[in-house]
Every structure is written in C-alpha cells, then in structure tokens.
Amino acid sequence: MLCTQTLRIVLVVIILPKSVILLKNGLALTPPMGWMSWGYYMCGVKCDENPDKCLNENLILSVADTFYNEGYQEAGYEYIIIDDCWSEKERDLDGRLVPDKKRFPNGMKYIADYIHNRGLKFGMYTNIAAVTCMHYPGSKDYFDIDAQSFAEWGVDYLKVDGCFVKENDLNTGYIELGQELKKAGRPMVYSCSWPYYIQYIHNKKPDYSPIAKHCNMWRNYHDVVLTWPALKVIMKHYQNEYDTISPYHGPGHWNDPDMIIFGTGVLNENQSRVHLAVYLMLSAPILLSCDMNKITRYEKKLLQNLDLIAIGQDMLGVMAKPYQLEQSVTLWVKPHLPKKGDIFHSFSFAVVNLDDQQHLISIFPLAYGVNSTDGYSVMDVFANTFKNNITLKESFEVVVPPEDVILYTLFPL
Ligand SMILES: *[C@@H]1O[C@H](CO)[C@@H](O)[C@H](O)[C@H]1NC(C)=O
Ligand SMILES: *[C@@H]1O[C@H](CO)[C@@H](O)[C@H](O)[C@H]1NC(C)=O
Ligand SMILES: *[C@@H]1O[C@H](CO)[C@@H](O)[C@H](O)[C@H]1NC(C)=O
Image (cartoon, rainbow, N blue to C red; front, side, top):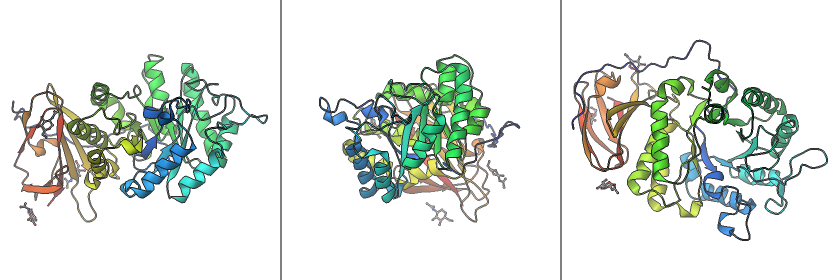
C-alpha cells in the first residue's frame, strides 16, 4: 500500500490567466470566518412551533455573545450572517425591504450595532431575482435601494443568491448589484452564488474571470446538507475542479465550498478533523452553521486550534493542490507565505483517507515542491507537537486511520 516512489518534481507556481482582473475592494484578504444561519436554522420562521430553530434577533445576538465570550473571536471568527427569510413579505411604501417585525423587532441597524460593539462584523442576504429562494422579496429592480438599505444598516458582508434567475441575468445582475454596493459607499464582502447557478441550473461552464473580478467569494457547488457523505462529495468536487478553479482563488477572491457542519452531531471526531482540515487546506471561508451551544468540546478545540486555523488564514491564500495517491487516499499540499526573515516557504501536507481501512502512506516532500536546502522541522498540527526534522532527501511515513487525516506543517530550518 505504499505510494509510488517515483520522483515527481512539481513546481508550485500560481499561474493566472493573463486577462484576469480581480476584485480589489480591500476586503476578505484572508478567507472570511464566522457563522451563517442557513445550514442549521434554514428558513427558521416557525418560532412558536419550533423555538429551537427560530431565526430571530435573540439568536443572532447570542452568536455574537458566544464569539465574544468563548474565544472564537480571538481565533478569527468574525462575520455573523443572516441568510434567507429575514424580511417581511412586502416592501414598505418607499420600496425598501423591511425586517420581519416579530422576529427582528428592533430592525437590522440595532443588530449591526450590537455586533460591531463586540468588534465583530454583520452579514445579510438577498437574491438577484424578484424573490429570494424562499419567496421573500428579492432585489431585482431594487439593486440601488437595497444596497443603500444594507449600507445604512451597517452590513459588512452580503450573500447574494441566484434562484429563479435566467443565465444572462446572472451574468449582468451580479455585476450591477456589485456596482450599486460600491456606490452605496460601505465596504461589504460580496459573496456570490453566480457560478453555482450557471453550472448546475443552466448547465454551462462558468466563466470565472468576471466572477473573480466582481465578487469576493463565490459558491461553486451544491448547498451542504448535514451528513458525512455530502461532505465527501463536496471534497471530491473541489479535488476534481482544482485545475479550473484554483487560478481564480486568492486574497480577496475565494472559492466557497459552503458551511462547516460542526455542532450538528453528524460527524465523529475523525470526520470532523477531515472536514475542517480539508476546508482550511483549500483556504475556504470557514462559516459555522449550528446552535453554538451544541458544539462539542472536541469540535471547539479544533475550531480554536491556532496552528490549524493558520493553515487556512495564511496570507498567501493558495488553494492546496490535490494528489490522488490511492483510490481512497488524497494528499493535499499547500505552500504558505514565508515567515518574516525566511526565504523558503513553509508547507502543509494533509493526507486524507476516506476508506474504512487504515492506510500506510509514504510521502517524499521534495516531490511536491519543498526546497529549503537545510530541511524542515515537522509539526503535527492535531497533536500540537514538533515531531522531528527532515532533510530534503528524506521521506516520512504516516499511518492514516479510517476516515481520518494526518496533517503536518513543515517549517524551513
Ligand atoms: C522554493 O519554492 C517556492 C515555492 O514553490 C518558490 O516560490 C521559491 O522561489 C523557491 N525558492 C528558492 C530559493 O528556490
Ligand atoms: C530541529 O532543528 C532545530 C534547529 O537546528 C533544533 O533546534 C531542534 O532541536 C531540532 N528538533 C528535533 C526534534 O530534532
Ligand atoms: C478514528 O481514528 C482512530 C485513531 O485516530 C481510529 O482508531 C478509529 O478507528 C477511527 N474511528 C472511526 C470511527 O473511523
């Protein structure tokens, strides 16, 4: 079961197609981290029948309190985002969106102020069409008015969906709304679902050039559902699409595989390590979606493991490159910005085993672009220890348990 010993020298260079112009609004220079309501609370409007899944002011403020009080903010979790189903069914007489009067009795500015007072950031949601995916008012014909409302309310992040939109209207709508947001004058991370709808609703290949030029992040693939098999499909998708999407990925413009499903009770510890490690290796946005009180002690430890978070928040922002070593074993390799004073990059290596058997894998780092002539010091990220030092001529062996990941960061000596 040893991986191939053939020496493959792989140059880790980032080649952008010549014509790519990227959105430069100074935001999301590292992938956004935070919490978003959809994955767990979904529409969350039946508060009397189902108070545990109620999307309302109390919920949003309590997430802010948890981030502030329980170490999440220090670890980098910042954005708190309300997804669909936050508004009244009708606009007001001036054509403005109105927050649901029962669930958001003090309006959105109140929530934004509360969140900002804790040093956190506030996100909201709309759709390019006349209605949202759940049939609340959408922004079509109101891009300017809605952009102004979001700006006045103090929104820092806007997720914009693309349900019920024709292909061409996706291509124009995201650009036009982006321009209105800019005019409204408040910097907002612009999260688009544009390529997802092009690829999976209109069955066309997305052109990522305009997407990366106008959006800070974008959804490429289906919504996550709360199961381990769904995560495996998503991870496989990003592996398969690496060549297509990685050139557009970097500081200020990110591919987004959707939310982290911690706190929902569906993952064992091994699976939760795989989930978070792969998303951080991808430099994906890390958006939780759960009742924060249901995050297990172990999940919290992972979410606040700074050596782990550093892998995804590294300023170089490179999406890890996947190598299929065996049918169920993938190696992901990610270079990091050299530490101050270092000339050589550090690298993270994640060996992911999705089999129900353990696998013994041998990795020869030189084959994947590492080049520090003095060798590397190897950190085991989950064990939180430095293991050993290796020279450029050495390989290392790992035993990866079933549905688990071994994650090492190599620092140049
Ligand atoms: C080492 O590799 C990195 C990343 O592949 C590359 O950017 C850098 O130029 C190389 N450094 C030297 C000194 O060869
Ligand atoms: C690795 O090398 C560094 C620098 O030479 C040294 O300080 C450290 O003790 C070494 N670590 C191990 C585990 O050998
Ligand atoms: C999880 O990993 C442990 C070792 O880290 C391994 O012994 C165990 O079989 C794995 N559990 C599951 C459920 O895959």
